[in-house]
Image (cartoon, rainbow, N blue to C red; front, side, top):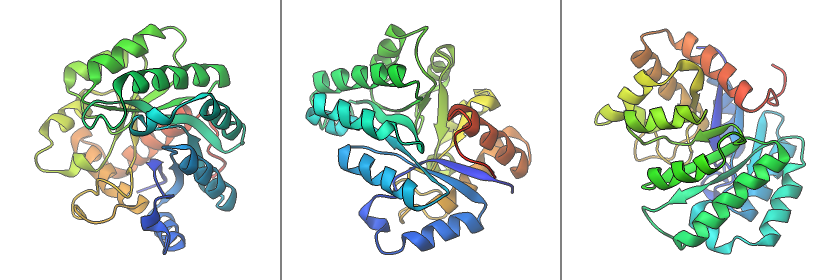
Length: 261
C-alpha cells in the first residue's frame, strides 16, 4: 500500500501496557511507519512525550481533552508549554468542545479551548481538535481567531457536507477514523467525497473505534490500512494513491517534523 501515518493514537492507554512493542511492530509490518500519540490530560501528555523519547517512529502532542477541562488552570498551560518544547511534540491538543457527555462544565470547556488556541498561536504549533455535538459553537470560537488560526484538524470528523464547507473555509483539515468502514456511515462517506484530497488525514484513535472487521475489539495503528482502503473506494483511486496523498498531507500538517524515511 505504501507508507501510512496514523495521525491520532492513544498508545498511552492501559490497554496497550502488556503488548505495546508488538502493537508497534504490527504497525510497521503493515506499512504504518509513523504514529502520533495524542495527549488528553497532563499525565497522558507527559506519557506521550516519554514514548516519543523511547521509540524513533513515535511522535507526541500535548493537551487537555474537553472532558478534563474542569482541571484546566495556569499550571496546565505551563506544563503543556514545557512539553511542547520537546523536538518530537508536534501539536497542541487534543482540545475542543464535547457537549455530548458534558463531563466538564461548558464554560470550562470554552475557556480551556480558547487558551489552547492562544498557546498554539504563541508556539507556532498545529491544533488537534475534538468537537462532538458542538459544531456551531466550535466553529464560532475558531472564527474568532480567523486570520491567525494555526493549522487545525477536526479529529474524527462527524459533521455533514454543510459542516465540511465551513471547516474548509477556515482552512482546517479533517481526520477520518474507523467509522468510515461502518455500513451505516453514509453521511461520512459523502463528506469524504466532498473533501479536497489534500485536506484529509488518516487516524485510528486507538484503542477506540476499531474499523470493520475489528469493530468491538481493541483498535490499534495497523488497522489504519482498513481506513485507507475505505477512503480509496470513495475516491475511486488505488490504495497506494491514498497512502501517498495522506502521508504527504500529514507531513504538511505537522510542518515536516515527522522525521526522515
